[in-house]
Length: 477
Image (cartoon, rainbow, N blue to C red; front, top):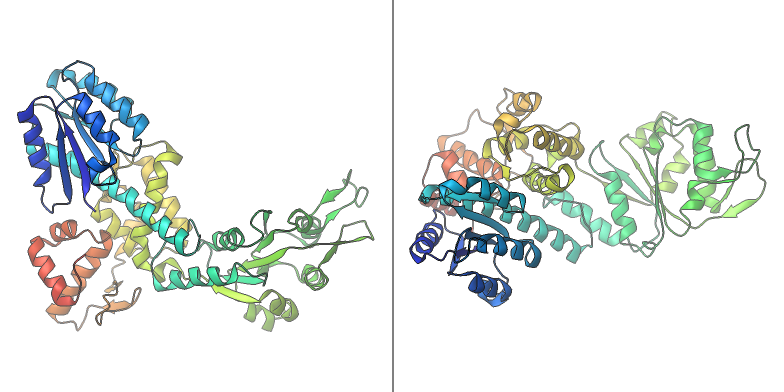
């Protein structure tokens, strides 16, 4: 869908110049309409049909028109009536301070007169990238909600689609679920998705991480106590099982649970009742039980570190989360997802990420998985000197290891004999045609499919890129 732009200027010649510069931008993708006064601009923005049925995405407006305050009035109108629409203001050279004031009121950026075509196109392109970023994330969230009702789980790889399918199948049931995966892969996110799509969603989701907790602490956390049960027990306390009544209890890192506590947990899961510390009265509990671990529980069973009977009790169904390095094609989507949240969470303007920075993040191994990726991007945004992230903002430990000095990397599947996502390919022994195809495919992954950017990075024309992609079996989008 094109970026829909409304150009507003009382000088028709200026409006024509801006509209033509935007409409003829390389790569296309922009639909432009003009308004020559404040009243028409408001009317167009208020009429959904004027923007092609879904309104405008971007307004480029002169600050001073029939009235010295028309631009400000239009900006305020857009911020209230169409808060999702970006606004670029156009101002004379001597009014830069006024333009800065407009940005403080919510404008995206400003353009100085006399008008320069390349400046107009650069500013509009940057605003367009932000709009496309927001669109993609909204579309992805909407698609997940429509199909599975799951928010926050981002990805289109085969591994993630399998996870989402399992969530949709298991959520309506009360079967116990064991979630397996390395640290940082999103095990609690999957557990919450199971709860939020279950009949128990109106009741509590209660989580407890078992790592580092000894037997007595875990027992108190899970089952609670009565007054006088131990020295500091000055009153009755409800445990996590009781607190989750009617809802879901999620135990993370269950593989770290002490053996003695495992036996007590097994009895509770079998009998569906708990007894508070210091009490003899059993209490019936009704909870959906979900557990997660980053350990090999079968190996722990063989080594007598985890009870076999508990293992089979909690292993009603298994969801295994792939590590991030095994689904590299999801990294560009995750980058967009995290960037879309950074502006709100960090209070800092984010315009996007350059291709070289994306390439470095896609190539890195991510031992800490999605959690490490999220933290890295947030730190990049917080420390960046400008609103757009570049290769210089990538942490040195990641930039230095992206290539790793190796000839192995991952490429995206083409559906036409290409390698599977995450497959390691060795450059040695490839002919030049194979190397060229690999370079094109990896570059497309690094720029999230943006063919205009990919062509620039590769140093070839867009027509050449389109032709080669057609030869590889890609279909025009």
